[in-house]
Length: 335
Image 1 (cartoon, one colour):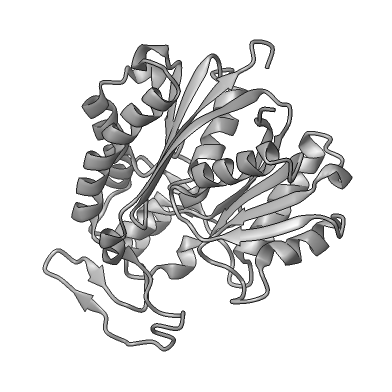
Image 2 (cartoon, rainbow, N blue to C red; image 1 turned 120 degrees about the horizontal axis):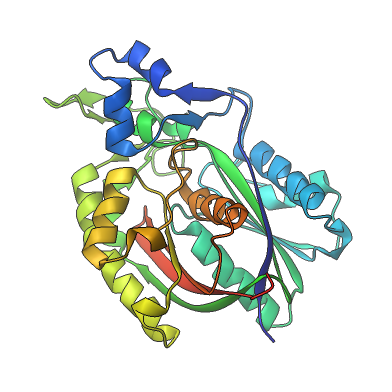
């Protein structure tokens, strides 16, 4: 038995935050500077009463409608999010009810960031190959905007909110290959939100702004950009090499590379570091930003629309944790 990606859709919240909007708040920046540095012109942001669960619900409904999927065939739901509605119950349990799925449907949340889609594919493939499920609804939904301090102009230029819905099944247009996964928890402090869970349930009100106007607060998302960049530069080339080895492929055998869409500068750095041809390296973040676990499936969805999904595709996700993962997709010739 094999596992396949059968369909992908994504949903963006209605509210937009453009570079022009950001420049009004931070006049020391320019629209051109933001676009050239991070490669984003606008990002979609949830409203105050809109959550990751709401986004995931909308993405799933859009998937069912766009691809004429009979929801009665869904027998497992996987939801990746780091911004759940509640400690408990599990958001995927609420989704089962919202979507009107069968009571025999399994449901599971998992907490991962930029590697989350890859890990979700691995879980879905395991469920299918293990005979536990035949049709897995894999959802990614993130609202990092709610973790950001209003004065954190750096991260506010990068991150957008979104959700994706993916049907992983016993048939489809892309066969899911072999995985390479990795973890280094020693880097946990370099990308973290400390407030809200049981280690630090209350606000510390410890905001500090350094000489470069970078914000550090245990009440909001903190990212040590330099350390994250160093981790990425070290881990991703090794990850790509391991994915190729695990799938008995050479780099020239890959027709398209779809990496986590972190930001324009980092992606171009990685492309040159790994010596990937520009025409084989897909970038889609100009109108959505870094949507964390949703970046890869959004990019796949757009690449499919552009008829760029052919042959062997290599996916690589990396970030908060530290956590990383990669896999290949083999596109059916008539897919």
